[in-house]
Length: 505
Image 1: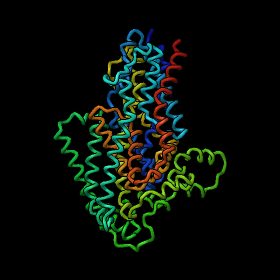
Image 2 (image 1 turned 120 degrees about the vertical axis):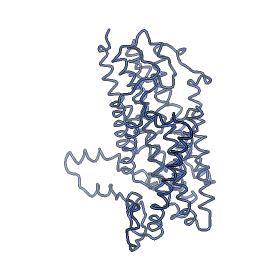
Image 3 (image 1 turned 90 degrees about the vertical axis):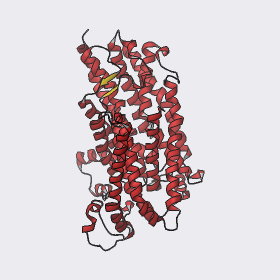
Image 4 (image 1 turned 180 degrees about the vertical axis):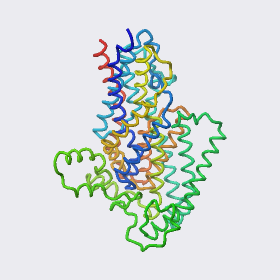
């Protein structure tokens, strides 16, 4: 029987792969910008706009040229050698299982691991097709139990890294007699170090298409140091003089004016030059929501516009809109010099953007990996090798799905990972993002299985603990989140297995 006979599976795979990408955008991508939105460094629509670009470019430009035929190798393709169409159907069912699980979790505001959802869905159809003995369960063989161990490793490593970064900032800068002076002097060094770390992260974790990680160590070191020095120079020449005038001098400067600030004469200071609550955030984006509300709703188009922009205009950062418990939790958190905190807003945007870029390059494989396997079998009527080549159109397709999911549904996870867990400030958000990045770097080189969702959650928890008061953490939200992690793999597997059994038998 020719592969063309199974064209319907390929078409269904295209549809369901888009929904899987949608779920990744709605759930996983929010990791990168939840702290920036929660700390009011960015408005929700600004975060979505930046993330849409960085995620798509990461997926399309640096996305994997090849992807594993079976994610994490929990089942073996050779079991399907006699009947490739069974693997084709199984991959379609895995897309159903993972997408339904992740989109459902997003609707409930539960941050879950899309990687674990994909793995669980593949386990589900594997058991339905060949029984439990066909699954690689062994911890020692990096099977299912090795992946489950990541539920502990990921938040622990990320938490330690994030807390270390935050405590260094707290005691070296914020606890000084003049925290603003110490912070602005240190900013160029922080720029350089952050840029070098993020470059190394992209090289190690998010650049399979360019094979940057295959370079000799000294070349990688030179690249990271060079980019770090370039960002440090940018901090000295552009950011520090501009920020000093804007933050301390209260001059009404725009963000793009930092590149030619020396040409701008001194302006009359205005009150609260950087006040994100009033729309004067780091990107000078204005209040899109206020402008939208000022336009009266008229007709069908207005109703459609309101629904289409809900994911961009929803309230995420204002804890006053939540219950009194969250307000008390935030009031108890330790606060630092406001001017010193302001200096970390730009850094927070930088870390979030680069993390999003690397995420798009790496995690798009969760959605397009099964589709690539389906496409290969449909074209060649045989089991693919261990690695499957990924077409550029498939990378672009996955990137678009991620962006649509983020724009329409990402606000729910940003709200859950933001101020509902602990109080966010620019320095805290910067520490969380950098800690999560460091943990993923460590894990990628040591073989420890981690999830970016679990990393940012652990980073948020440990930075919250640095307040020295357990009441500054939303323990109920953390418990619900952990419960969601535990349920992700079995629920995705159950859905995938049931769909496969119904379709195959």
